[in-house]
Length: 393
Image 1 (cartoon, helix red, strand yellow):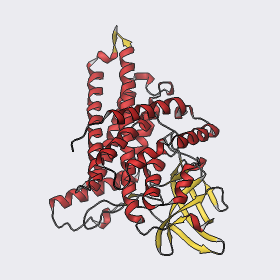
Image 2 (cartoon, rainbow, N blue to C red):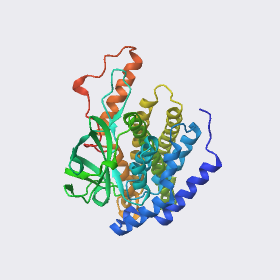
Image 3 (cartoon, rainbow, N blue to C red):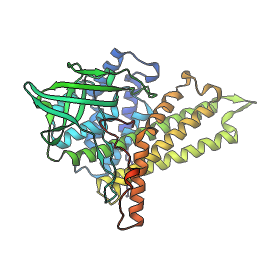
Image 4 (tube, rainbow, N blue to C red):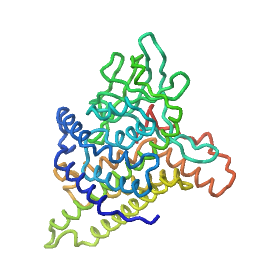
């Protein structure tokens, strides 16, 4: 990989960051539903969400993929309420890759559309991590298609108009648009630590879906895996952007805050801690960029590297958030400082069943490197896939 972020990519990220800071409400203020929806419509209309998707399309050159990741860091530096990661990181790339016209129209009309992104499945005999969604049942009825099942921990479900559901239809994998105002839909109370994307369970009881909204491309699983890997990198970009922002805020605070006649940033304990987390974040950024390049060039081991990048970037974000809270001292836990917003986002991206599945997938890959003919993972250690039926990101 021989690439440097050029002036165009840097300018695009600066423009996006300025737009987000000026036009989007701060999640820390817990804006009302009307404000969230208005901001979402403006964000969709600005076409910034499509920038990342266009940079990850099939055939995109490696430099474009890295540049898209660089620009996406702005979504971490200026967090936005709504399912930004699911739409920009997964749904739009999937709709573009599979020619899903109905899905693209719904994503572009300003509706709040959400989805569960497929999680890591148990590695196969080749020890290559793959992402698969748990599919709900979709059967033909007299008035179209009926979908039944439970979706666990769907981000932003409580305020969404539509959810994209992975289904099994006529014996084939498919995705379907399910309007959440239909009869038979039940959405639970929102919960979770992340103020940007509270989660809720969605229960579908024989919900009627128009047959035209069910999409069954023959290569869906291939694109499902690739787009879910791209979504993982989008989360990495958010983590790097959020880490960089919270470190910058902490440095500014430690420069201005004076104790014993000196700025607290001059104390060795504070300086060393911030230096340590900065090194972790820069390492995470370099890894994410390298993985984006390797995915675009189909380099050997790239799927496992995506998993490693998620573990490193999420860990670096959490370390940055913890350091920020500590370096702010007694003010670190207060909402006035705004550090909690980033720390909550870091906690959300680091927990849940996705962490166990990632570790198992990475261990299987490393085992395969050591043994040319691996026997595969121990069935007793296989984690459940994190997909349409549950698991935090």
